[in-house]
Image (cartoon, rainbow, N blue to C red; front, side, top):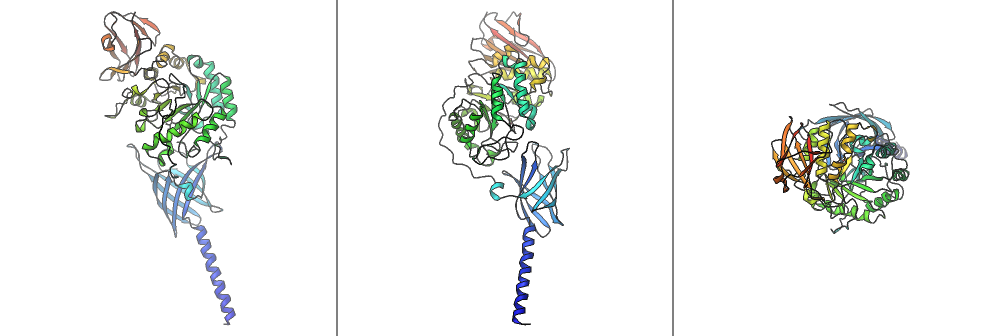
Length: 522
Ligand code: GLA
């Protein structure tokens, strides 16, 4: 063979080898990936993976913030991808296996479907695409500001009253629902009863920010300014939602690194209330950082050019009642999420299922005008509890001076629900301007008596029956510190005077129910 021919052979062989290497490299799954599942609002839910391919075997991990789970049974062959993730069970629930099946879709992407091995969740289908390390792993924390006391914004001297979209609509809420709710707030009499804020919770956000870094809306909320103007035209106020992390709890765009810009945007749209939900900030910051992180938005809201009620949502961690007011907070969640079930209401309201856990009463003295503990929004009217349970809900939230944010569909309320949400005498206990801390007067088995001294010197009393049978519950005037011989007693639910003689009041209280009276000197 001539030298020339030999050279050509070597060159051709090298080229072939390189080409084969390139093909292999292209089909190698090793690296970061994102599974994008389209939602019904033009955005995508994203979940991330780091994969490693060795021959036909695929290993790696799923990465959701700081939560990581190893990939099992991973294989690739003939363009078909298969792997499973074993999600550990939480709070006593069994774990689930999620099975992923993919097929090459060209352009280095896969069409992917995920399906849980148990439960009746519908399979999720979308596209598996290359990601970057930066997009996959939680970002580094931002530098935290030095702590200082954010000046009082002067808003909501009594607990905020209004409506919030989450309990009823969760991720399905649309601008049309919000308009409908503003209409119904007026037509149902809720506005007259004192409800004023119409608050949009999570899932209004767009997929990504615009070229200037401004947060955008998704297809469900095409015109935020128009929506805010509409709500204002009804004489009401409007609220919005975000998180100090990169993503909200529902996985939408949030305010991390854009705190000032977002506060200005919310003000420019015309918002009057912000719920700021920790969520993915927990992947970046420690609980000890919460005060500084929340302070940042407190300052940003004050500089936004609009009075905006600031509602902290971090589930009562890091003893928020001790510093929520210092960061400019008007309210701070003191518990995890409520749900429309007696067990949830009982646990959140009385908080004694976990031994040693602080109850709402234990931290009630942290409140003052403009600064309120928030045991979460109302479930009244959502259908999962009885009328007695909903009356107990309203009574307890009123004695606790909790924000009264209705969470039901105001357009379709039956009369009983209206009578619970709009009882003026119970609302007056909630809106009492003294914001005195409620106190436990007595507790016997499942009967609890809680009282709050009102600004006019009278005392509001709730006689609560947490038990499964009707109960006779009594309260003596002396236990309330009422010195008048025969004080005036008014039944707040019935809105009528009660004839009493003697030194106490006794009511027969239904299962999971309440009697509520106001006691005043004659
Ligand atoms: C958290 C909050 C809820 C609600 C959802 C929205 O769970 O505690 O009140 O805002 O996020 O994703």
